[in-house]
Amino acid sequence: MNITTQQHEAGSFAARDAEPMRLAVIVGSNRHGRFGPVIVDWFLEHTAGRTDFTTEVVDVGEVDLPTSFGPPPVPDGAAAVAASLAAADAFVVVTPEYNHSYPAALKNLIDWHGEQWHAKPVAFVSYGGVSGGLRAVEHLRQVFAELHATTLRDTVSFANAHSYFDAEGRHRDSRHCDAAAKGLLDRLAWWGQALREARAVRPYEAA
Image 1 (cartoon, helix red, strand yellow):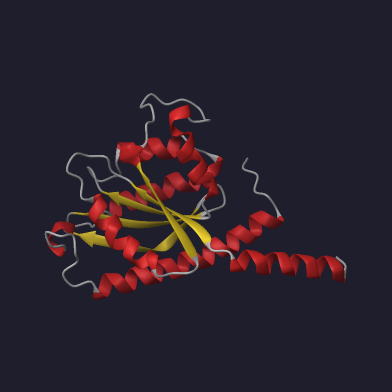
Image 2: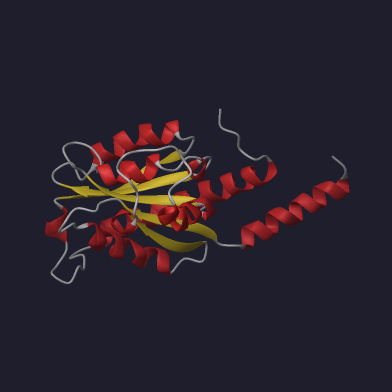
């Protein structure tokens, strides 16, 4: 590689570094009376003050996808969601735990898309009973590994989540979970930037 090419690539990386990454926050439940929007609103308070992300919410409750699975591309009614996922540099999946695993609507959203997940980082915010949704997270790690995504070790989880939020959806004492959210976003920023640069240099090809 000559010096001119090296300088050009260095300049390209610097430009990308200055551009905020696109973060898609996925609301993973469509159940009636779901608690997910409360968790999402709390999490969005932490993304709002950051300059390294621009955030978009993707809500499975608002996505019209057939439950009888077909191969990509997604139906016309869900094209906007497919575009949002494709544009994202990183994902945060907000999931409850249903019967020791993740919701069917979330799996349907994941399965209807393919290359949108490739070579991108996925972080998890989970909630539920005594397990805090962590069993759902562990199952989702296997799913995203099959889709060539990188899942983060760092998570945020809420055990018995309802007891931690008041009637207005405010966390009663958020010091520890605030720190966990910051750690998750810091780690996600590292992976998001690293993988964005890697995809720019060498487009990812899934087998």
